[in-house]
Image 1 (cartoon, one colour):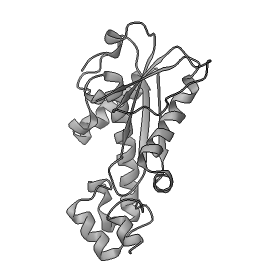
Image 2 (tube, helix red, strand yellow):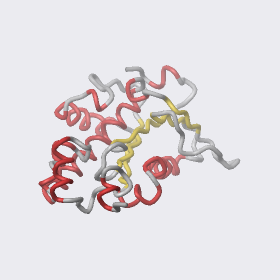
Image 3 (spheres, one colour):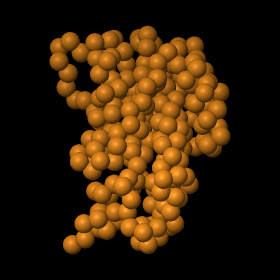
Length: 205
């Protein structure tokens, strides 16, 4: 894991942005932004998918304690169905970067796409997409952990409400158990109706 300030020494503050929950067929997508101090090095930080739940929880506490700024946005399944998952993710990212548009900061965003392509003349924030950024830069890894921990907590609460779908374990991803539950009980209110196989069940031809 690399400190982002080593690769981009011209910036006093660098924002890391990542999401959790693009692939599941149920629940929201959560997007997080984190700004870490220049001298911050958090031991064990990595892409959230490569960490155990216990380790993520430990790192979540360290990140939120040491971060100069952290914030997250929850974009609900209804919005995902309305505008699609990519645009829903961009919506959350844009809400997170909007307060910094007039700041001379750098935003490193995990993945190949940027939520914004054009800026007005007053925009100073620079955005850079980084493929596998959550395995490269500490600030993006921190954002991935924040997003993952928050989303897992949301899905754990949904499990209490809809226990038949095993959201506590699958987090809304389409496991064998989850598929069987959908086939047996139908869909529940938090399923994404634009995603297969939910789409076919919700709106059969």
